[in-house]
Image (cartoon, rainbow, N blue to C red; front, top):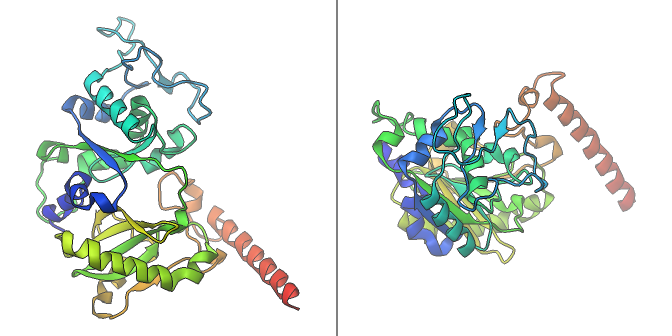
Length: 341
């Protein structure tokens, strides 16, 4: 992968060309001071002071924020650090004002991402354990809690064959993309599509931790819709030969573009592996993979999954989940047979 291929997948690069076929998004260039804040290893964890004069995050929102004051602290504005070692809360009034205006334009709620990644691995830190944000400080909390965001800022170009010793933040500007939050979102209708040699070689269910019977029934219909979208919308407008893109199929069967990602590297291959995808180049038909049964679900592919569930050996947490799934499926089959008889 070359840097130019990676750079094409930045949301501020592709979104203007696909605006009418994607989710409504407003993009802000981040000042160096805010990027420095995201990279600081704070102890304790300090959120920016809000220009509203109120606490950065309310304690009674129903979210899952830790209550331990040594873990997360909300400090009042101060011109300098106190002699006793407490920290001054940073403030980004211009950026906060721009962000709050964008949130209002987008209907009052957004989910954030930087050039490539969203802070999905930090969703448990968000209000309601989601990426839904209604304020600048909620966005700052998610970004600062995310390893995916740190990867974007520091290591994004490491997998490029023409990478230099410079970190990403030394080579190009970073942007904050605010994407309109939709209350109704069906995870089974999100798909990752794999393009190799400008050919759509594979389509995979994006949420691989759950079995959705509807996908087995609608696989052919969905495949046709997504392939049409690729040929009519994606292929003529995107310059790379090898890449992935994520789509969402709405209830009215309209396909919406969610994101682009580079081929290989840190991009998840879902229900495929990269080697077999590269062999699919000469195959005529695009392979569409979905989770076929409860027994075929996969463990979470994000770091938020409990560690023992990533171990799949005998007696592991995931092994127990699979055993329970097998029992549940057999029971379901027996019930179906009884209904037929």
